[in-house]
Image 1 (tube, rainbow over the protein chains, first blue to last red):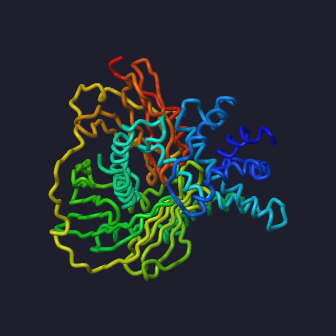
Image 2: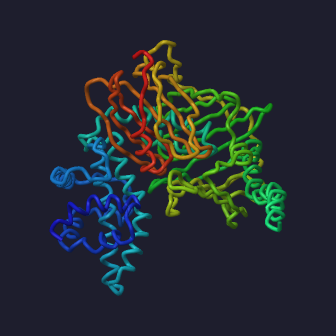
Image 3: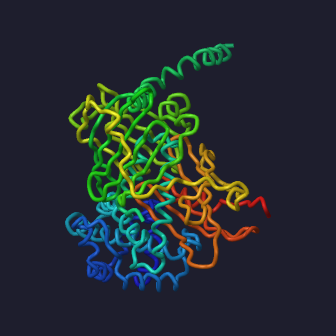
Length: 193
Length: 321
């Protein structure tokens, strides 16, 4: 289990993207050990998630550790090299959600038979929790000063693209009011700079 | 001989049978689209993506054959999208205003899309019923046949056929985004005054680029697109007079859409990476072509894996080189 942290990042990321097989999924659940769980819980990530906090920064120490891990291992095979900085944030956010998976899986294992079934239940939970991971990721990638990978100018640039995409989607996507609702919501969230 | 007779009977019956199979769900959707465009209504709904919830109000009416719609963000910052006939305006929270593209040749309507030309990559069926905003509804499911697009669940009002609830769902059936009315008034007595453009500080239209401008000679080409996606809209406008023009190319499969943006890259910070917000994904990639360096950004409502695959096959041709 010593190598599991580095190994898990890639697999967990794939796992959260729904790209792992059932077998891999079970392995991920099995290979999160006590020490890792403890570390993760010290970050209060799981706690934040439990309380439904939807937007928060991934701790700096975690990013540093993740960067070190990624540098050691090279980029995860499934993620193209060009993804660079923000992809790491994506992985970080995935791991934040994965923390909850580990947590829930553990509780499942303790309370239930300890077989693989709780892991599958936890996998279901992950999907429910995945929007959180996205929210966390987005809070980092849209104009958060916490992340050196994103310059402050990213926000108006991306807003402009969202505006134009919504315009296009409203005319071409056949999704009715949805693109405008999206636009209004994002514009309200991002401000109007 | 028997076999030939059987084959003949198939060719005779197949064309008759097929439309009959498709009718109920398609008719529902067509009625829905018609209702959404032609009825007068006022309602409040929840807009939810990921862990975030917004409350919004929509007012819709038709005056002199022109469609008016006002979408207002009720919590947090005040943002509105106003449609007055073929004119669409976004009013930002700092009271500035962006005029969006005028619709060309009429809107591509959901009814036409779904009833005349159901994207072959989706399966449409009536799925059950339910209650939304205190009204009885019929649920329609639009399921994708591959993993390159999301599916939809739609709840249609039994009486008015209005769309009262809709969800964008991923491959595992989890809703990524939801619009759900909590109340709706089908006789609100709206007038033109309800669709007035408010006083604004500053107005910015999406500016057409002068011909011969660098961006207008650029051509975006995609080596790979998910089945059914076609290039729909080229857009060589600058979002704001102050910023550099960004070229855009839209793609749609009839239901889902994504847009590829191309900006010439100079020295400096490059914002590569991925971000996601509900069903919307934004992926950026640096591209070096013979004509120079570009930053390609894909924004759209498609799975991240699809977006990444598309963007890897994007190339840029510059006619001047």
